[in-house]
Structure formats: C-alpha cells, structure tokens
Length: 75
Image 1 (tube, rainbow, N blue to C red):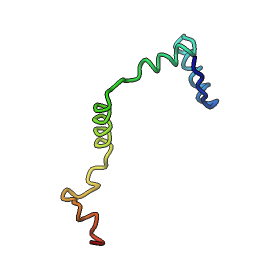
Image 2 (image 1 turned 90 degrees about the vertical axis):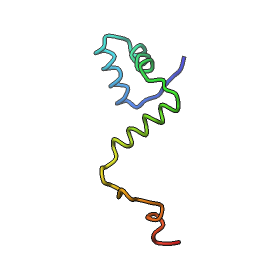
Image 3 (image 1 turned 135 degrees about the horizontal axis):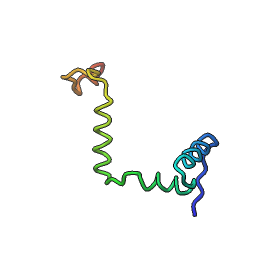
Image 4 (image 1 turned 180 degrees about the vertical axis):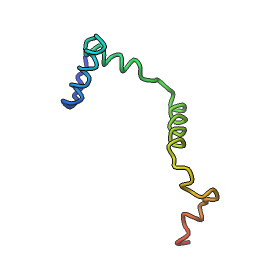
C-alpha cells in the first residue's frame, strides 16, 4: 500500500468526486491512474511539441528569424 499526501482542498475535491461517482475514494483514485495515458517517451515528446505549437502566439517571431537575430548585439 502507498500513502499519498495531498492538501485539504484536494482531499475534499477527490472525496466529493468519488461520492459523485458512487465509488470509494481508493477506487476513484485508482480509476484516475488507470485512465492516464501510457505513451512512449517519443510520442509524449511529439504531443508536447504539438501542444507547444498550438499554444504559441501566431506571429511572435518573424518568419525569417535566424541565429543572427539572437546574437545581433554582439559577435
């Protein structure tokens, strides 16, 4: 058995969710763990990169952005 410590607010939220689902707290937490994706590191990286691109602000960098732009103030 493993003990996980959470703050009081999280504990109340988990207990409320478990009661709403009609299951014990232990079963509810287990269902959260069982439902988590088990991806390979490569696909996790691909998903992270995709999310990063989707959340990027359009036009935040010029289309011709280059290494020279980074070091423009010194050689």
